[in-house]
Length: 219
Figure 1 (tube, rainbow, N blue to C red):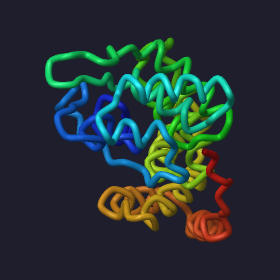
Figure 2 (cartoon, rainbow, N blue to C red; figure 1 turned 180 degrees about the horizontal axis):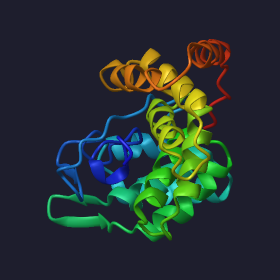
Figure 3 (tube, rainbow, N blue to C red; figure 1 turned 60 degrees about the horizontal axis):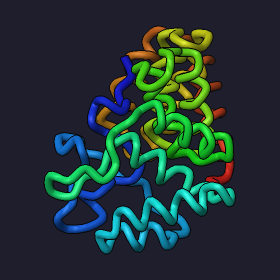
């Protein structure tokens, strides 16, 4: 079981409504998502923060069709979480629709979409459950420095779920996640895994982690 996924209530995407304006709330108010820092906040984000949710969605959808990666992600995230103002539903939660938009964003290199898609395929939400595709998207996000993806793909490498079992790769990704602040989770995982590894394997994993250079984040 992955530590971070969509239904655990933790994510690194946009906190819809709850972070973007008073009087609004996500359709699932128990969700406590941690936002990734935004690069290039667009007009849709500004509209959303002001509470103009319908206009924000219209703007994002228009820009998404023009190729805006951030807009593609924002629309997908809105369908993933759902958006409501008081008791009025602005965007109904729709995982299948979310997946369609998030796939387009992920294919362009958005690491937030990589994490969200990994969760959808991990849990079979809006898509057919597939550990292999979950691993694919978690790995893509991990390669761009997305810390939750790094932790998740480490777990999958350790367990051999969705990807070939590889303790060296698992250790590398746990190490990188811990370096980004996941010490509480990555630290114990490293300690546990190291007991089942040869010292040379641990050294190789640490060397690989230190040589790691993340792929660029796309917006």
